[in-house]
Length: 95
Image (cartoon, rainbow, N blue to C red; front, side):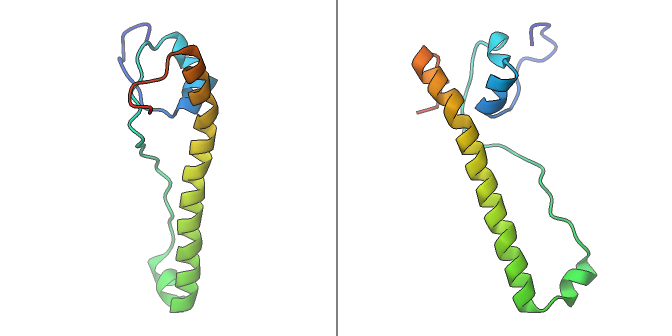
């Protein structure tokens, strides 16, 4: 960003803090959305061969893992959010 090749980025606060992007980024906008490319891939034939109850078990755990991942990101962002709040630089849209 200091070279002005790019003028923005999309990352959670945890990345901003860890990578010290606050040193080169003046403004923040928190939109509480993110796209992450976590793909669950498998063979359609193998999936179709599973009994319906087994498919239900797998789907249940996939969904639980996705929700747990969102919780992990929220927990990782809590520390930097508190740091921003204390320093008076809480990003726009954060509250």
